[in-house]
Length: 546
RNA sequence: GGCCCCUUCGUCUAGUCUGGUCUAGGACACUAGGUUUUCAUCCUAGUAACACGGGUUCAAAUCCCGUAGGGGUCACCA
Image 1 (cartoon, rainbow, N blue to C red):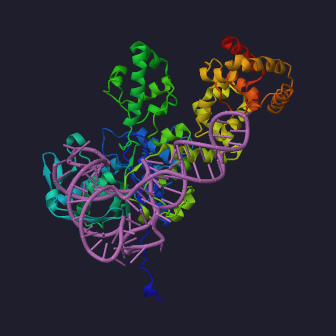
Image 2 (image 1 turned 180 degrees about the vertical axis):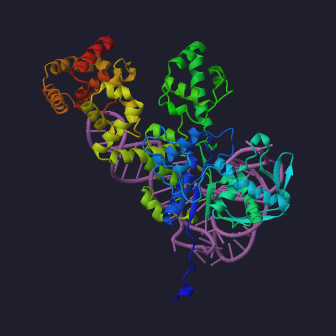
């Protein structure tokens, strides 16, 4: 083989992720970032993070911070751009030029505009007659047919008749900033981006970008448009889904308890963490709770207050929602990588190293995909169950410190270890134990009628009798550990010739938890403690006895 | 509505470019059975798809045309 027959040297791959900071990082954005990241990493290229804040009214610094935080949580790193944020980012300012890394800084379009990057090129277009002034804006002439190739969707041809001149520089009310179309084209070209990987909503804009590239004398990049991620009902996943869910719950609550109770509930609700509603809304809200109820606003603040006050979880839409719900970042990534891409064999569970090795743009599909929470949950549950117990304990305690502090307060540290062990195999998310194990922390539960009937009152109170007798055994137990308690039940079963462990365990469960479901009965009693167990049995017998 | 794009089990998908190996494979969900003190886990089995209609061909999930359905876009938002 001679040097001539070798492939010509390919220029290094440069991809970019270019969010506009108008809210938290959306799950679709996360997949776009993941694919851009994986492609760059696979080819030893560069990933640029560029912030497209040409919309002065909607862009917020909090959103930029939130997006960076979410990317970091996911473990996606970039080679050029703002940040990454240091461990404690309270005083860190991503807009600070010194904190931006890379040869093409700044990476904020607002700052690039201030540097005159866009105006210079707009003037060029004006001078050559390819653009013209229209009122106080500048428009680009679209008078040619455009053909381009999309890596995913293939060749696309658009006739000049279907294209219109479009604004490349906004007027006074837009601060005379470049529009997205102009800024994105200029930046991708000047930053040396070889592959523009983005959502398919941009496919229809691409003729504009191609024409602009041609007019400015830039090489056109490879365009890679990704199909959309939809809800289970086929609608597009959006932030509004959270507001919808909250509104539905709030309406039900108001119908049952009245509007005063609704407002009272909001007053009592303390959203946690604060960042839940801290992003994307930099204007003080003038909307009332009634406005939210009646659909005049989708304010994230009300979503947060309602969900917290009513104890419901809105559907996870943004990356931070998945974090909050207790999904593992690499599992989320694994799952969304499968939406529109696959390695070509039956492998579904993989780590990021595998993704990097196998990622291939040619294997990206064209079809929109529906987000299947059940499958994600299964992936997550499996990953949680497979973790070493100590690791699970550590991340669980971390999660609970953030979101369910009361569990740490009521269970002591040793107790929390037992708690974690009891729920490791039963948890779909890190939040699951908080729902499943509420009874450990809150004793004033109601008894499930079906469970009571089946396990206590049936057959003339057979279960209740067992409970009464076994209470005495427990009262005289001096070694209150899971193992001892387990043996105690075993010998009790044998002594009284009962059918099986369940004859004792089930009545106990109902007395201790109000339901027929709990972790193993030994650890459950051990964690509850002798006093609470005896008290709960007494309360149960008193409440349930005919 | 114009333009562009898409269409395999309920869902994510393999297979389509290079027609035969596809009586269409896997995963999640679902159903049944087993294990278990409950739940969960785990094990075993099962149900289930080429949108429709025409072509081309010895042969079509795979190629062509049409129809239907879905998505995107038509902003001084990105």
